[in-house]
Amino acid sequence: MIKQEVLDALNKQIKLEGDSSQLYLAMASWAECQGFEGTSNFLYSHADEERTHMLKLIKFVNERGGKAFVPQIEEPAQNFESLKDVFSAILKHEIFVSESINEIVFLTLEHKDFPTHNFLQWFVSEQIEEERLARTVLDKLEMIGSDKGGLYLFDRDIVNLDVAG
Ligand code: OFO
Image 1 (cartoon, rainbow, N blue to C red):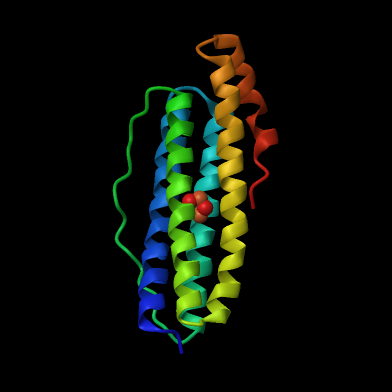
Image 2 (image 1 turned 90 degrees about the horizontal axis):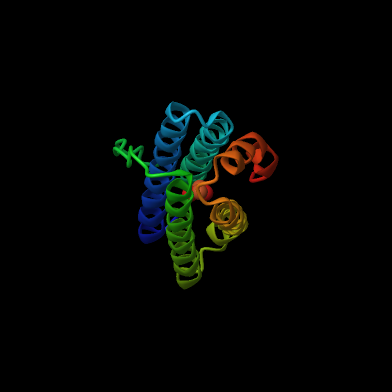
């Protein structure tokens, strides 16, 4: 049976993954309205990925004899200055999510909860990938600056960057 403290932390993480999904969804919608079709598709699909992260946690908690808490949907940021602004916010958010995962991993060690520790390794690897992806995209956007042609090509080619699981 899973310890209450670990259960609480996992339920908090469920909410964080749900919030992540909403954030990507709002960014996708913003990008779509700005005419960045490739970027919006990338972000829509990422919103779905975040939802699968949330589901993974919900199922694990329930399988381990806990009760997953399905959180209320929070309103994410809706307006962004630029694509660079979007991806800076993504990187900041993913670093925050990684820290949250790392804290739960630490908690599982304190409680000698090795099954949860083992389960969370997937999230540890996933966060490395998500941060890497956000940094790669951001580096490209830094190079492009406000060059319209560059942004057009970026939006066309971003589909090739979506390698996160
Ligand atoms: Fe769930 O990986 Fe991003 O937040």
